[in-house]
Image (cartoon, rainbow, N blue to C red; front, top):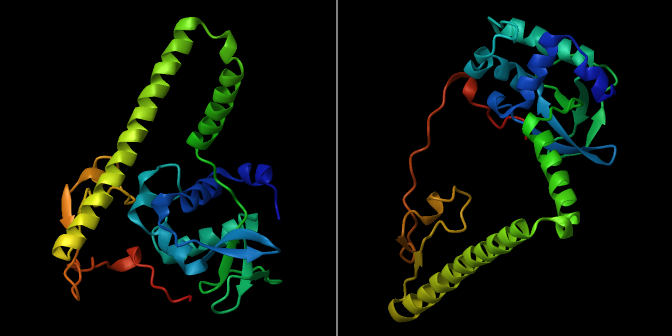
Length: 235
C-alpha cells in the first residue's frame, strides 16, 4: 500500500478524480468493513464508474472529460494502478474483507480506499482546536476585560442550555398529562431532538401522536432514474 504522500504526488488528473470520488458530490456508495483488524471504506467498482458519469463531476474544469462509460472505467482502472484503492474479496452478508491477489478491475468487484482526502476545513478545525487549548493555558495572562467577557459568554451559554433542558422537561410533562387525560399524547416542538437544523428543530410547534393502530402519513417515494440510483445489489 502506498503512503499518502506518494498518492498526493500522483498525476493531477488522477488526483482530481480521486478527490471527487472521495467527496460527497460523487454520491459514491461507500460502506465500512474490516480488513486486517482495522476499519476501512469499501465500494463496488461499477458504483465508482456511475459517480464519474454524474453531473457534479463536470463542474470542475480541472477534471478530465469523461464522455461515456468506457472512458469512466478506464480512469477507475488508472486509479487502481496508481494505488488509490485496492481490490478485495468479500463474502456475502459479511463485512470482513481480504486482499485479492490479482489486482485487475471488475465492475462487480469490491475495492478498499487507500487514499484519504482531507478537506481544508478539517486542517483549519485542527488548528482552531490547538489554538483554543493554547489560549486556555494562557488564560491567567489575559487582560481583565477579556476574562470578564469570557465570564459573561459562559453565563449566556449556561442560560441557553438551561432553556433547552427546560423545554425538554416541559414537553415531557405535557405529553404525560395529555396521555393520562385524553389517552393520546402530543409533543411540543416534535423535532426538538431530530437530526435537523436549529430553526427546523422548532418547526412545527405542535404535533399529536398518531392514533392507536394508525400510522403517520408517508410521502410517496422519490423516483430516481439513470445513474443517480444505486440499487442494493451487493448485499
